[in-house]
Length: 376
Image (cartoon, rainbow, N blue to C red):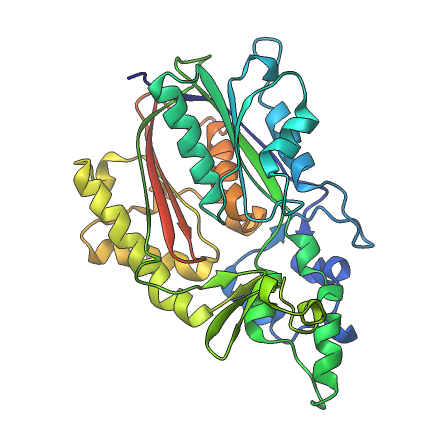
């Protein structure tokens, strides 16, 4: 088996950072009214800035494929270019279309030559599924090198006009209509961006990250749907948009990104802590041997709970070991772990022998990925 190294990282965040007070100027106001829960959610999630691929009129500036292609191109220079790459794996929650796949649309923008592709489905873990495929392809010798990406273009789904049909229907029966919390909640949580990693079977330059191991798991056999789009719960039954009359799609906000916050709070930290600790034990390593811990968290609300969870398991993490950028980058789903590692990679903090742990939960139906890297 080959050793596999991440030799380059890149990221792309569209437009200028959007601060909390300016969010509704871009996303709009449902029914012409300020959201009643926005300030509460923002206070809890700790996000101060985020990026949207929308202009001030709410028009898309970059498609998801364009965001991804820009991030990929930033990996390359005269020493290596996309024409040298054997495999492209692109993870995202929301492609620009149902099909063709996200990877083929990104490849179409990148051009150059025919190439092997993968478009894993998923939400936050989609970027890690792409990571895993790229890693295993190089590890097995099927590819000499590979690129994986994580990207999101969610802001168009968060715009107020997506909720207007439902708001009109509610107005017929309620004096002061309000969009359900599970739909409004994620409007103030999610944002756009893309990141990319270059995997090779040898080191490159002064800084490379050897991939020591990677583990992933799903608890969908135990737990129900928690975060979703393209469906609703009707009479406690999960109903796909394919089963609905097209007139219902707008009236029920089928394509809004929705979150069961009670299910989220009950399980996302508990399952994640258990999974990470099991794999630290499996690979015979403790947090005291790890220099940086990069957790993808949707909200700073969960950060203290994550720290306490590890402490209760006998795996305390010191404050200086944590590295995260949620407050000033935002929750970018499958791209978040790419954005964190890219920032750390270019920060000047990494030294030879440092170990970096990546932790990625996905609340959609409770999937998790964890990976250990070593600086070489």
